[in-house]
Length: 110
Length: 113
Image (cartoon, rainbow over all chains, first blue to last red; front, side, top):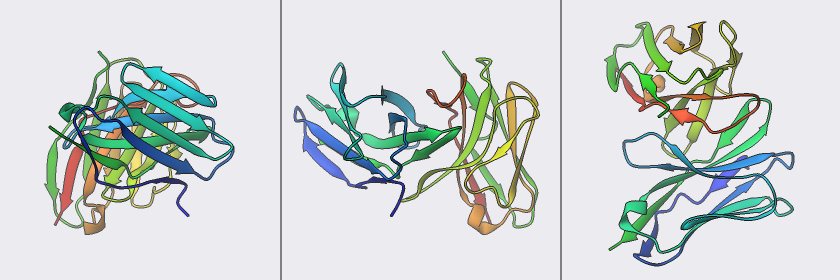
């Protein structure tokens, strides 16, 4: 079992819909959780971080964390074609160890 | 704006060559990282450094070494390039203890032939 698992996709949603991206992890000691967005040919950039159970909202983005079930998700409301990218889940487990998932490719159709 | 700059966007090297990838950050960050990114495998940590002249192995250090002589510069060295080191290499930097937001460079696409 991989330490951080994401569905590779592609996930295709119509413009204006909600895109739901999921990530599961194996280390129960994981401390911090991050979502990065990576456009094709570009480097990753942080869009959300979450540290405690529950929801965290930032504009059209909502991160959800459930430590008991060991999953973290990212919801994108009112999806736009400009949201088309690969979304990487990153889990900080302590020290300097951060594990990245392989990413989920999202396509938003106009 | 935080800027992390990698010296080359694309590199083509021959098997057995010694390869240097350079990374410079301008935000006085303590921590610097080298990752490689391969399809289906995500980002894998090669080496990181939390201070000048300090380095720690990541998950896949074999075949690589690093150098950090100045705070702003972190170099990745492929001692003898092999075809299985063909990949996208990403440098990142971050501030403070533990893990906070990492700022990435634009990446170097290395092809070893």
